[in-house]
Amino acid sequence: MVFVTIVLDGVGAGWQPDAATYGDEGADTLGHVLETCRPQLPNLQRAGLGNIRPLATCPPATAPRASWGRMREQSAGKDSTTGHWELAGLRLDAPFPTYPDGFPQDVVNAFCAATGAQRILGNRPESGTVIIDECGPEHLATGHPIVYTSADSVFQIATHVDIVPLEELYRLCEVARRQICVGEHAVGRVIARPFTGRPGAFVRLSDQRKDFSRLPERPPLQQLLQKAGVQTVSVGKVADLFGGVGFDRTNKTHGNAHGMEVTLQEMRQAKGPTFIWTNLIDFDQEYGHRNNPEGFAAALEEFDHLLPRFEEALPEGSALLITADHGNDPTYPGTDHTREYVPLLYYDGAPAQLLGTRTSFADHAATVAAFFGLDTSFGASSFIAP
Image 1: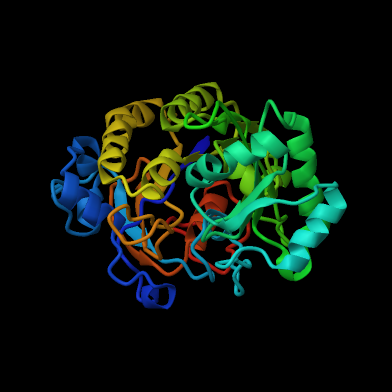
Image 2: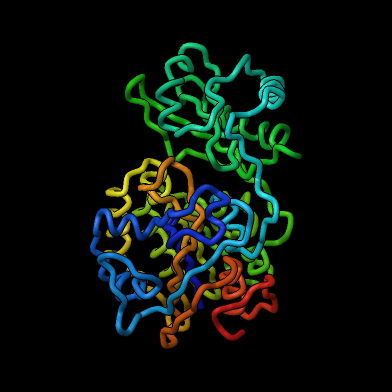
């Protein structure tokens, strides 16, 4: 008895009615990528992706293999932590703090005092690759850490592994998480961003990245499952978004292909009731934030190619759910996430049906809980009868 949730990070399905509040009216990740690049997605098409809404190169299936629909985010915000928390049944009424003008001087001063840093470099919202290329040479010369943010609620610290040992970078992040990013500055994540290389050829070490997340104030879905005796498994960055809360086993991954292979392995070796929650990060990290619709389209084709293997590996009496956590339209102005509906494809062995527009991402939590017989709804509606 296995339930697998795969989050296609950033693969939104069209702007929500409140998108204008976020400056995202007109954003449409799937629609614009398929229209611009015309990827071939035969397996997602057969699953019912084109039944959710009109999409170029992905017409509706006559007899979809999966139940289909979309989900609307209710929480304030449009970042990965907010999206995953709502998927786990935790709605945020107030957004995590963000810093469009960089961190205020009192935060910078407190960080330097607590860590012993003489000063910091950067301190603005920026792409990690851009700010490392720009500030990396001075960092090599001085050892000053590069501190920056993004449109998300993050406090990111980048250091070269030859200048600052990895464990020291992690210590800086722990200090920031416990002493600096608290109270009104309690960001969703403090992130260690180690890199290597030389000026003009710096390389981020994504497999050594480490997230120090704000901990949820209420038990999320996976913690309740864990207490009920269900094995809980994270693949990719999911566990990081909850500070590790509620997971029996975590699997770090380096890209979508690795994440998909690890998920298949976890599916095949699952024994007893098991919940596997996977995040495939490349859509968002490599292509959405870098305004690269061609790369985004290629990543969709890569996932589409492996989709039949997930269907085949799913044990009898189990379920597979495919969705997203927010949008990240690579054709839209800027490099920020976009406030969008997320697609919903659900396999459980029953005849496929229209799931409609779900009023909250928390419907995912209610569905997983019902699947494992837990008596909780998270204030949401499940796709299946409990």
